[in-house]
Amino acid sequence: MTTSATPILRARDVTKVYGGTHALKGVDFEVASGRVTALFGENGAGKSTLMKILSGIEYPTTGHVEMDGRPVELLSPRDAADQGISIIHQELNLCPNLSIQDNLFLAREIHGGFGTIDRASQRATTVAILRSLEEDLDPDRPVGDLRLGQQQVVEIARALLQEARVLIMDEPTSALTAPEVEVLFRVIRELTANGVAVVYISHHLDEALEIADDVVVLRDGRRVATADAGAVDIRWIVEQMVGRDQDALFPHRTPVIGEELLTLRGLTVADPANPDRLAIDSLSLSVREGEIVGVYGLMGSGRTELLEALAGRIPAQSGEVLLSGGALQDAGIRDRIDRGMVLVPEDRQRDGLVQTMSVGQNLSLAGLGRFVRRLFVSADRERDAVNRMISDVTVKTDGAGAPIGSLSGGNQQKVVIGKALLTGPRVLLLDEPSRGVDVGAKADIFELMAVQARRGLAVLFTTSDAEEALHIPDRLLVLARGVVAGEFRRGEITREELMSVSDGAAIDAAEEDAT
Image (tube, rainbow, N blue to C red; front, side, top):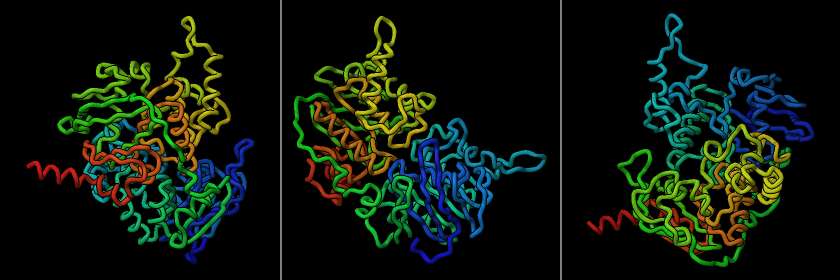
């Protein structure tokens, strides 16, 4: 590390071997009190394995961990917590059937007299910590009723309650809005001002650089670079992570546009969480063969509700949805898939994968009907299709029989996309397809989208990432409060202009003129 501050937590020459796989190869890593260390690396680089060792979930094959300069054995998360180490996992680790309060105090309840639980104290503490995160949520509300970003806030609140000396944050902002990120950064600065060491892992490189003091980069299980955050930029980080220039991450393509496949006319959709509010307000758009259309919007813009209404997951109040001229308003999810329109959902863990199934079973699940012969599934046809798809979408796995949980986040996302492609779609809908994956996996996913467009599919995807919005789609629609605030071809808009359009200022001005 480049800092002269005394390390509080240190990994010394740590190696981790799983069978024939070397996940970590002699890694040295340290964090200092009052500083934020940003840890970068592609999926599979060893970041999560290193963090699991530091938080007591895994034990190193060789090497050791030191706390305050003394070797410690972290045999369990409880051991790590006793040493003052807390972790916020990338994939949410909450009980959806329990309330916010019960999730925060699970296994560390506040006890009153006679062995009872002091729920009044727990509630007051829950309200206070949520207020510090600027979330006005009912402590008794079930976590399963919260949107993804609010669940992320609950996960963060639970970690903050432990008053850790070392706080590991693995993708803490993957589902947060821009204002929520600002609040989290304020909290992080307050923690470091009080001497807490923070390890910050994020695929949002610009965001991580903003909050970091120190930078560490892993590649293929080795530490390949360290630096002061103020001395490096995103291009340097990308080159260290993937060994190639940042510009190579976005596919260069000249689209060949065909006939119109997807048509929306005056689509209106109510907000499922608040039926009195419109998530989509009289929206019209079209997507043609071979075209990639992006929908950019901030949280609450209606981008997810748009795709879920198109896929049949939530009802539309009014308007028309046409696929090759045929109406879909009365079609259910299965019928829409059979007719050629399929959705890759935003939350792959909850909506895209079955965790008890293998990689191959997840891939073939939505398209099983294509392999049925005489009332039975043809195992040979299914196996051949699954193996081809693993190759086509470049899933890094030990094989179709591998547990889905053994894959990195980026490879799990590729499985969800592959599952959608095995249904034989004509229109591919992708909701935040690069959420929570590294830059290398993002490049693979963008290339997958380009390949499908070249094959004649109509691709419609949503994103809250400005760089994706500017570089990936042939045509970009900017949503603000359920209304199209702007439409642009690639290269017609700058990042600053995109931010300006997406905040809804133009819509406010138009409404003022109308009144």
